[in-house]
Image (cartoon, rainbow, N blue to C red):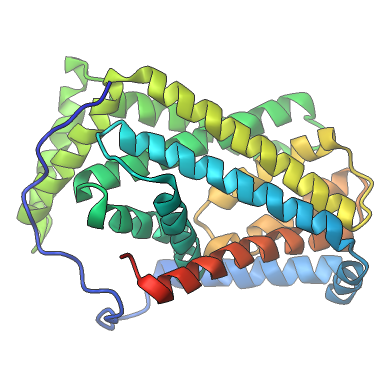
Length: 340
């Protein structure tokens, strides 16, 4: 079922692309992320041995890596398809090739912006230029991100249940809490019960934000209404979740192929235990682009399976290099046409 509604009142657009933001002081949160990134990265390099990891990479079978890259590309296309479904649920007709281009551009910005959600802002803005309104675009990206996160956390909880001895208790607890929290957030966003009236009434307080509150409130309320409209089409959410689970399954194959390329004695079932936890940790906005936290997760979990630290780090590096290659394609596309 497709739901349409009026766009939010017009507000001044963001600064044009290419115009640098006003300078200001360095945020404490950014400094903390930088410290965590450097600290964890340094620890992983010390534990695994950079020289040993580079030597392992030098012996990698690049045929396996090429297959892994193809698997990663297919998983990305499935994630874009999920996003396309979210846009279609709000009446936004969006060609898949156009969304793939925007997704690649967003991946590029995720690597250059100090935020795990910078790419989401970029693709929401890009889709709003020609494909739909800003309100619908933002609502679709929010739901797309939530459904994707829930699918990752669900697979992670399944992995913990299957192999509790491999996944540390702290990881398991975070996955369970994250899954419960994610499902609860989606439930509140989609519910139209009068009991939630007081919760939605909190949006009125947005108006109290200094300088921008009065202009921001109509847009926030319109975005909330757009998100709630998904409640009329629950099968859409179910289909999007199924596609997301399939994409995550390809990510399992992806990491398995990386492990084969460096001679790690890992089965596909063992990769199925590690991958969801890696993807879930990558969602945490506690380091710059997941640097350090993701690599440490590889070393710890594969280490619990008997994989040497240098080999585990080599697997993590291969995965990051392929994702970086995809994001560089997005950078080239952005340089060529911006969002046009």
